[in-house]
Length: 414
Image 1: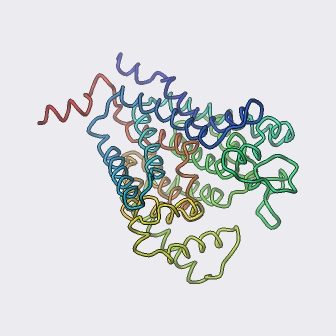
Image 2 (image 1 turned 120 degrees about the horizontal axis):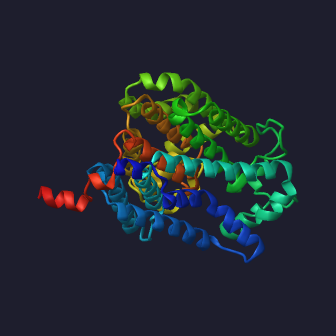
């Protein structure tokens, strides 16, 4: 009874790390706007600090045999990073950092109780919605507090448009012909300061809702649906609008599918992208067809040296073509490892687990058609992989008293 009670309590350290991964950019933006200008190094060091604290918590808990898959994925990516640093004659750990975020938060989630995960998600949602409402109804106040345009100028070197007087991030301003529902005059950003992360935050909240829906009370269901809808309507994200429809249908369909079917998600998305490229090879512009065709065009231009990781310095320039980014940043073998991990890591025993197991690869590999950074950045990946790690072990709680660290397990077997 004591072990069960401990598992059901909230772990405030895990909650703090998860919420910090969502908040840190907005906190840095406030410092940048009102205390002192910051640079990219400050952003990187803050993320490293959050990851370091998370990894310390993971080490204190210990790793078990069930962590071997995630650990091997991390070690394989580290080996690829060393290999790519050697052949490119430069230290290149960008993709390893992405996988380290996945490993850290998935491991934290595997130890987190349901109350811990719920608290991290609901606190993050409350803060995001509070700032979003400020952005919708008091835009001038929002811009004065965060100064998003200035933040991305000092930390990323992205110049704001000369004609803009709002102080917002340039990409959030939209343009003529861009999908909009007319609720606000720009694409909402909230705590994330840019619209892409906010829309993907809605996608993560959809997966949280999909997983816990059967056990939620009506009030929480209505709250989550309303919040997700408001984010979708104010960001006007075509990708997440499509994903929301998939999640709605998937709630009924995904539990009927075998978990291993998720292995087909990436090949099917690439096949669909190839068909679109063949049918509309001249598609251009910031729309789904234009973005997908752009990615397929980049893939078709790759050569053997790119597949083997010789163009690491070019990876960052393919932020809008996720598949190319991963291959250039982690080799074709890194891409295959990522595909296998995303497809196989989620559990698939219960209906809720199977819903999540099918939704995750759709979210990931559909996103990679039109971008790369949204699925890897800590402000999105933190909560997502916390949920995945928790869902993987919820039906068999990993209580500290019931297991030994990996080092002891291996030693005893030897």
